[in-house]
Length: 66
Image 1: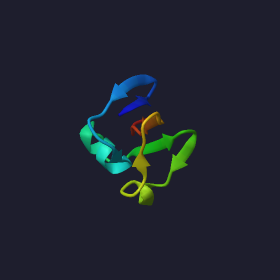
Image 2: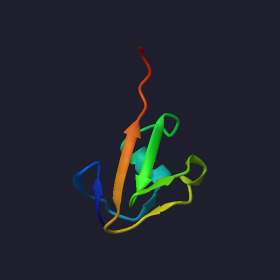
Image 3: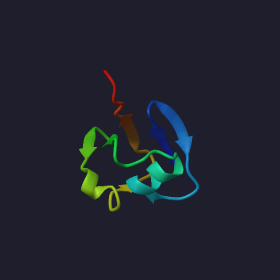
Image 4: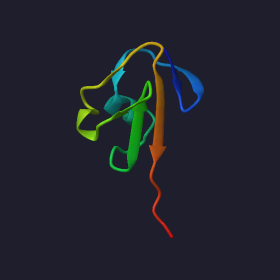
């Protein structure tokens, strides 16, 4: 399965959910925003939202500080 993740072409062995994608790349769900094909995925939908072949995913991590 092919997708674009943060502007880079990636291949995955199998379809997955947003939550599974975050786990594969060791990104915690607490401090990220995920956009799939131009639409923000609500945090409560991470476990159900399926990533499909050809999707464009943007993941933004929030960093604290000042």
